[in-house]
Each structure stands twice: as C-alpha cells, then as structure tokens.
Length: 118
Image (cartoon, one colour):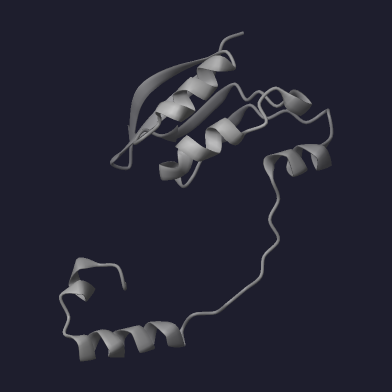
C-alpha cells in the first residue's frame, strides 16, 4: 500500500493517516530459516528433487548461482525461475549441464525453464 502510485499522490497528512493504519496491523514474527543445503542434509541421500520452482523470481540472478547443485545429489531435472535479469542464473545452470530456454508465459510473467542434460 505504501509503495503504490496512489499513496504517492496523497497529501502529507493523508499519507501519515494511512501509514498509521497500516502500522496498526503489522505483526512482527521471528521465523526459522533453512538453506537448501540444510533441507538436503535433513532429508538424507535417498531423497531426490526433480523439480525446483524459484520465487520470488526477480531474485533468480542471486539465488540460482548459490544453489548447491551437484552436492548431496541435488540436481533437479527441471528448474523454473523468472526471466528478468536471468543471465547470471542461465550461465550458472549451463555450467552445471542444464539447457536453458525462454520463455513460458504463466500468469502474465515470463518464466525461464532449465532442464538437466542426462
């Protein structure tokens, strides 16, 4: 709400009122996080990941190169991720033996599809 064009057009006093309303409803929570490697360690060697879909897709350029591909047997057959700014992700996947193609249209967004060459 606070980052919309409609909010940006409001007068300062109206912005303050809306921001106060939004802040009334914010709840802070601490949540545990786990890396892909943590999940793979917990799952053990018998578990295989065949499909991986990355969201939020606009972070694919950072997320894909950081994946532990090849470790713990982690080599999904198919990986999908966002198209925009995907060149670093594309190169990282090609280096691991994936073929990358563009684009599948889903929900109005372009999605890259990488398939593992066997």
